[in-house]
Amino acid sequence: MNLGGLFGSKKKDPASLVKSIKEQLQLMEKSPNKNDKVSEEVTKQLNAVKIILVGDPENEPNPEIGNQISTEVLSLDLIPLMVSQLGKLDFEARKDVAAIFGNLLRKTVGSRQPTVEYLCKNSNILATLIAGFESPDIAPHCGSILKQSSATEALAKLILSSPNFYTFFDRIQSTNFDVSSEAFGTFKEIILKHKNVSAEFLEKNYDQVFSNYTKLLTSENYVVRRQSLKLLGELLLDRANFNIMTKYISDVENLKLMMNLLIEKSKSIQFEAFHVFKVFVANPHKPVPIMNILIKNKKGLIQFLSGFQADNEEDQFNEEKSFLMKQIQQLPDKKIE
Image 1 (cartoon, rainbow, N blue to C red):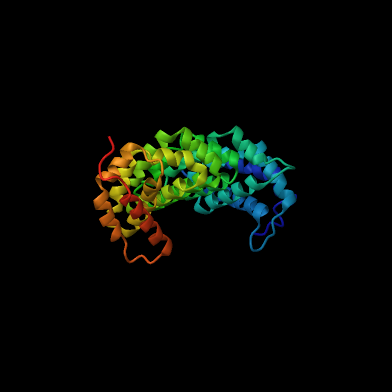
Image 2 (cartoon, helix red, strand yellow):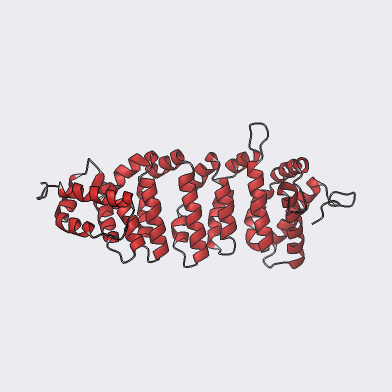
């Protein structure tokens, strides 16, 4: 697209361009049916804004006009409209909205981040993006915007505290692979991005989070089970989550679940379950109920582990397996009263 004449005397300046996009989106908002003329116009204008902000193979970004665009987008409240009408936009326009959003998030004025501040004051926008995972058409774009937003600690905290956050657990189990994959990828990035923020959230909302997380670990979807197990292992072994790990490995039901997952047909599931199971066994302060389950299954566990994934030649895995077997062998033979 040649932007040379975009801001000529008969064309729109930055303020007029943003105003025009808002007017087109408002027309979309009022109409239950798609208007091809409106859709075509807003697609063209959003693409022009994206090129001004981030450039393309034929055009360098224009920082000066880009800053004006940024100011106008916020002052005219264009962001809520772009998000709410995402489902009515053409595919290319949705991609452009995600690119525009990402650029605006990174813009600074001195030490301030105006778009971040705007979203903090209008947290319902992030909630709307999470709700967008209901639609397979816009889930990838909502995921892209949320992942870019979660790079900022303040926004990550808002996403975690959103009333819509727990819908991620349902979307991850969606029968639509693209929705499930995007939802899990977004959830994972939000949970891992700012460890202290995440740890505070997980600890404060432990029961609600992990009752939902157990549904992922017992899902009928193999990919969901494997990915969720792997992420659980990462979370429990992170120092920031020490309190969460301690609570998780003190729960008998969690231990039983891991022991069942150890004997799944899938070697990948077994492997990921092993990395969670080892935390239960290696805990030097095992609660009595955990001790008694391990004591009850002592003989069977030693026998099972001796042949567990015997074809795995990875040194670290085999060292950990030997360590666990030794720990289990050293357990008492009789249950603790």
